[in-house]
Amino acid sequence: MAMKTMEHMTREHVPESHKWDLTDLFETRDDWETELQAVEGNLTTVTSYKGKVGESGRVLLECLEAKEALLQRLMLVATYASLEQSVDNTNTMSQQDASRADEVTSLVNAALSFVEKEILSLSEETIDQFVEDEEGLQTFQKYLTDLFERKPHTLGGETERVLASFGSLFTAPYTIYNRGKLSDMQFEPFTDEDGNERPLSFTSYVGKYSSSSSRVVRRNAYDSFIRTLKQYENTFAATYAAQVNHEVTTARLRNYDSVTDMLLQPQQVTKEMYHNQLDVIQKELAPHMRKYANLKKRVLRLDKVEFADLKAPLDPDFRMETSYEEASETVRDALKVMGPEYSNMIDKALSEGWVDHADNIGKSTGAFCSSPYGIHPYILMTWPDTMRGAFTLAHELGHAGHFYFAGKNQTMTNTRPSRYFIEAPSTMNEMLLGNHLLSNTKDERTRRWVILQLLGTYYHNFVTHLLEGELQRRVYNLVEEGEPLTASVLSEQKGDVLKQFWGDSVEIDEGARLTWMHQPHYYMGLYPYTYSAGLTVSTIVSQMILDEGKPVIDRWMEVLKAGGTMKPLELVKMADVDMSKPDPIRQAVAYVGTLVDELEGSYQQ
View 1 (cartoon, rainbow, N blue to C red):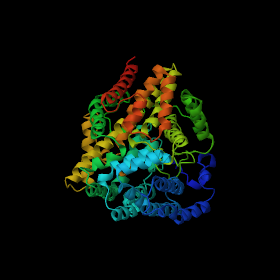
View 2 (view 1 turned 45 degrees about the horizontal axis):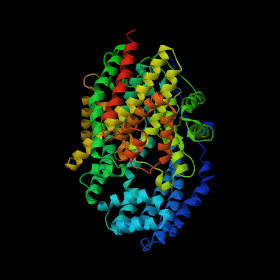
View 3 (view 1 turned 30 degrees about the vertical axis):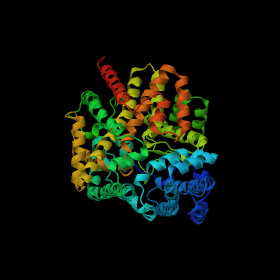
View 4 (view 1 turned 120 degrees about the horizontal axis):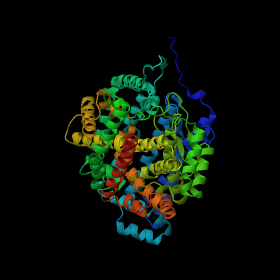
C-alpha cells in the first residue's frame, strides 16, 4: 500500500481568520521598534525622582504614577514581542525581538529598582501619614502594604539594582527550555493503523495524538515523542537545575527559611494552604482516578493501561467533531448565564481578533491568555477539531474576562491577584460549559462524553499539574539538602510520584518518568499546584450558581472586577468559599468521585 504523508503548515500559510490581530498593540513592527527605543529613552520620567521619593506624599504619588505609566508602555512592548514569538518559535527575527524586549525589560527594572528601595527606607508610620495626606496614594495602599511585608527580605540598594539588571540572565533557563522544545526538537514521523505516515510535533502530540481514539496512533506517537525527549534529557535537566539553584540561592540571600517560603510570599498563601492542596488531593483523589483507569482498561479492552493510554477517549467511536466557529457559538451560549456584561466581552473576544487558533510549525504548545493592561487580552491555542477545544477556549476566555474586567475597574498596579486565584475564573468557565452541555442533552452517550470532558479538566488540574507540584516540592527539598539535580534524579522522583498516585492501575514506563520535560511551569515558581486551588474554588462556586443563580453570579462578577485589591483568602471569601481549611478541597474531590461513579454506572446499564 502506498503511504501518504500529511503536511504540517508553516506560519506563512495560515489563513488570517485563524490568527490574532496584534495591530491593537502596534500597527507595524516599525511602530514597535520606535516604542521599544522610546521606553528606554524615557527612563528619566522615573529616574528623575531618585533620592526624592521620601520627600512628601505628593512626590511619592507622582513617582509611582510615572513608574506605572512607563511599566504599562513596557508591558505592551514586551507583550508584542512575546506574542509574535509564541506563534512561530522558528522565526529568527521574532527570537531576536523577544531577546531585545527582555534586555530592555531588565534595563528598566534595574533602573527603577531605586523606587522600592527608597520607599522601604521610610518608616511605616511615614508611609501611613503620606497616604493620609495624599488621597491619590490610597490607590497604591495594597502595593505599599505588600512591599513592607517583603522588607525583611530586601537587600541593599546596589545589590537590588545589580540583581534586577540580571533579569534576562535569570530567565535564561525558561528561554533555553522553550527554544530547545519548540525550535530544535525534531520528532520522527509515525505510522498510523492505515499505514499513513504522520508528522509529529510537540504541539500535535500534546494537543491531538495523546488523546487519539486509535491505540496504534496513540502508542506509536508516544514512542516517537519519547525517543526525541530522551535525547534532550541531560540538557533539560541541567537547564532546570540552573532554574532551581537560582531560586534556592536567592532564597538564602534574602534570608527566607526556605525557597518555598520565598515563592509563596508573593502568592500571599500560607504553607498550610499549599500543603493542603498537595496532600488532600493526592490522598483522596487517587482512589477515584484508579477506579477511572480500571474502567478505561475494561471498556477499551486493554491488556494493561499504559501511560500513553491515560488520555484515550473512553468511547472512541463517539466523537463530537466541530469547527472553531461552531464551538465558539456553543461557548457563547454556555456563558450567557454570566449576564450581558460578560457576554458582551465574549462577543468582542470572538469577533475582534483576540484569539489565535491556528496549527502551525513552531507554535508554542498548550494554550495561554496574555492580558496587556489598557488594550485587551490575547488568547493562544491550537484548534483540535473536536468539542474538547471548546473547553480550552472557554478556559482561556475565563482568564480574558478576569483581566478584562479587572483592567476596566482597577489601575495596572491593582489588576493582578495572587497566582493562587488565577485559575479560578478560567476553570469556572469550563464548569459552566459542562453544566450547559449536560442540561441541553438527553442522549446518554452525549452526557457520558460531557462527563468525560469534565474529568479531563480535573485530570489536567488535579492530576497532571498537581503531580507537577508534588515533584516541585520534592525537588526543592532535595536541592536544599545538597542533592545534585540530574536527569536520573528527576526521572526517578517523577516515576515515584506517579507510582504512588496510580498504584498498580497504570504502568509507569520510561516515558512517564520523563514527563518532567513536558511543561514550562517548572520555570514559573510554585505555579502548578495553583491550578488545583483555582479549580477547587470554581467547583464550589459553579455548584452554588446551579443552586442559587443570580446572587452568586453577581458576587463572582465583583470578585473579577476586584482584580488584585485583596489577598486570595479575602477574594475567595467574597465568593463565599473559605480556603483556609481543607473542607472545600475535600468537597471538590468528592464531586470528582460522583462523576467517576456516574460514568461507571453508565457502562453497567
